[in-house]
Amino acid sequence: MRSHLPASMLASGVHSEGDGHALHQPVLVLNASYEPINVCAARRAIVLVLKGVAMTEEENGHFLHAACVAIRVPSVIRLLEYRRIPHQSRALSRKNILLRDRNTCQYCSTMLPSGELTLDHVIPRSRGGLSTWENLVACCHPCNRRKGNQLPHEAGMKPAREPRSFNLHTSRHIMRLMGHSDDKWRKYLFY
Image (cartoon, rainbow, N blue to C red; front, top):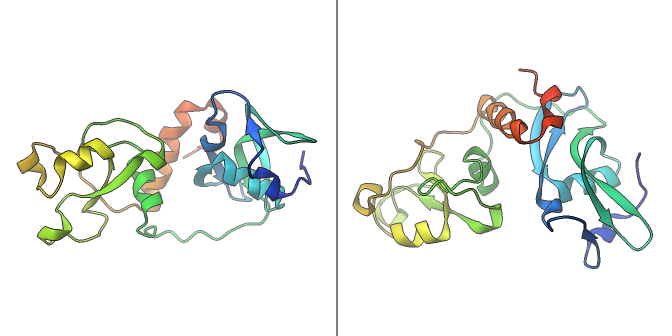
């Protein structure tokens, strides 16, 4: 069911039922061929559906309420037109670092919403560290302050996993792991 509600209705005055975080829940994005290609926030997924770029395949049980309509929040969406996805490394970005690290602080292993995480340079920039896949990790604010300008061994803080570049294989692996939290994703994660 596609609604013709304008995307502007997702602004203030609109709320969701439940825990208040329904619009931040992860949504599996499928290509037109049903191949998993990304994970986005429910808010972005709703915008894509309302713009007619995607359609809802599965719902997560929450509703988005506006003055004249209630929209079911998607759990899985599918793009209506096929997008060619190059089989190469993804762009180095905050979003992709957090996705690679599963929104988990690499020092204390606490999983947090993306807005509550920072990026940490394992080797600080002031000590010659570069902004690369191998030197950036997701980090909570307390751990980032505690580590400060130190090397991990100086602070007694070792990253949980060695940071690596984020390629398509890694993104599929992450989507497969995230699918364990939502049974509706499993039938789309076939490799």
